[in-house]
Amino acid sequence: MNYYVLFGPPGAGKGTFAKLLVEHKGYYHISTGDLLRKEIAAGTPLGLEAKSLIEKGNLVPDEVVCGMIRSEFGANAGVRGFLLDGFPRTVAQAEALDKILADMGAELTRVVSIYITDDEVRRRIKGRAAVENRADDADDEIITTRIRNYHEKTEPVINYYKAQGKYFEVVADGTIEQNYKKVEVLID
Ligand code: ADP
Image (cartoon, rainbow, N blue to C red; front, side, top):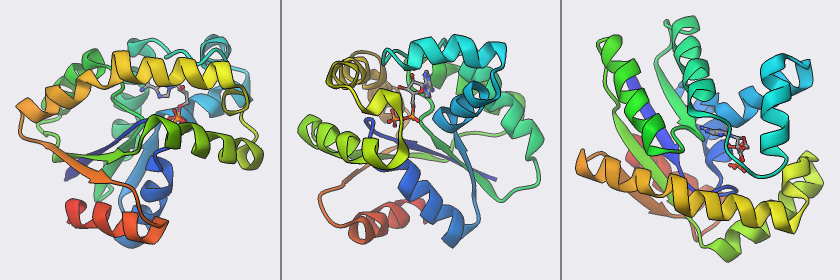
């Protein structure tokens, strides 16, 4: 069983590449952002807690997303492999993931990181705001908070995986097709 992390700043295209990898490779896609938005849409207590954090551009607590990941693995044991999109986003989540996988007798295969600049992050998120209708995409201040949280809390995850020899980076400076090909090579 293969376990991949698709890593990168908001708007890097993790979700887009994950969908293409599902089509081409048959892996199972887990997006913590999508799972949280489902909880919000369903109006669950967890959704209510997440909504106020997400709409300010802040991360939801590590325990919440780690619990979601654990139950997604449990509920989809028969698949070929997993693509984690938007998780882990803190070093504590990366450590928890190693523990969750170890408990299942498994380990992470590799991390495929998608690099874009902060200016590109802003440009992409603004483009997406019109299409996906996400409140957290529509406001400059919220985008700034998300970029700051990415640098402060998420970027340290890179060194965590570099130390394990599992970190591989793609510079996403081409078309979607060109960038996807680079991602696919690293997954293969
Ligand atoms: P993006 O890639 O644009 O940041 P996501 O759908 O991955 O979009 O995430 C949307 C929001 O959901 C994040 O800004 C954060 O508030 C919350 N979120 C998603 N995944 C996590 C996570 N692993 N840890 C904490 N918060 C998360």
